Length: 177
Picture 1 (cartoon, rainbow, N blue to C red):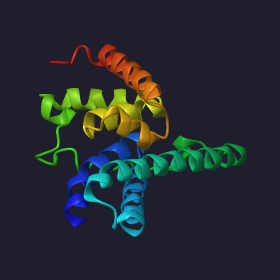
Picture 2: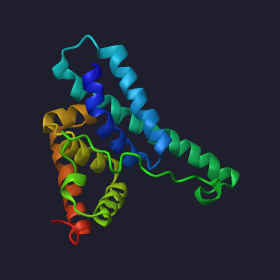
Picture 3: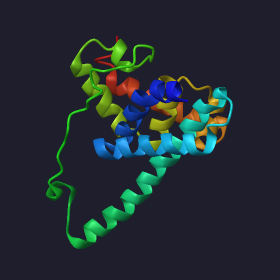
Picture 4: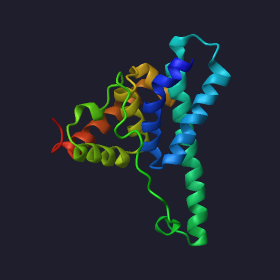
């Protein structure tokens, strides 16, 4: 189990950070997902851990979005805005550290400018498109496993993934090799 968790840690953090744009929230999501996997599914066969972990991660991200919507409603009602919250934007510690066995956009893009453009484009995608793209491309899950992780049909995965790819190609055409 330790080897599996060490292998998915960097990619899971990156996925959570893209979804939340917040370092601490991303770390909390990954930690929570890892703990849930260990507590509930450590006895399962190792081949099942990947899809189970991704399912837990995606549920945690959706839960974060729900909580954020509630918090944002209260902030708006109380007169707070995002700019007035004095949020500290910390750099991404994994920006330069990539698991050597994990294929990712960073390995294929030559410049930091292209990586920044990719990050911005991924952040701009709707949540479901983000999830489908990241699970299929970064995690290498099949359509069936992605559908299971996201809790949707295989046809919906294909639709979300296709739309994400079209959007990313349009936004990154200047940077795409």
